[in-house]
Amino acid sequence: MYGTVARMKFKPGMAQKFTEMIEQQEDQGRTRPGSVGIYVYQMDKDPNEFYMTVIFENKEAYVANANSPEQHEQYLQYMQFLESEPEWHDGEIVWQGA
Image (cartoon, rainbow, N blue to C red; front, side, top):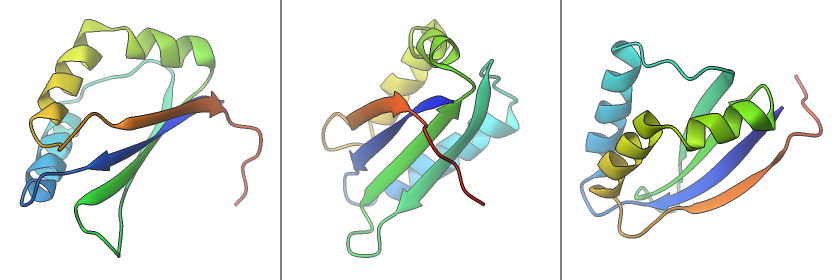
């Protein structure tokens, strides 16, 4: 499996709008071929700081999604809520526990 961990810092008051937007996109059935899951964490110490993990079956599926026009459009939508660009940390998942 392959994926990314993104650190995102939201503008004050924008975190809730972001979660509403991603829930709406999921409800509309946006598909990401090879997607295994997405998890979004809101930090206790700073409610405007989020970490998002995105998991794909393999690197090829991840790269195809990252380069898709749909993902670019979604990224542009995200940016309206953020103070700056996310920090991206891509890599191979080498262990998974239960």
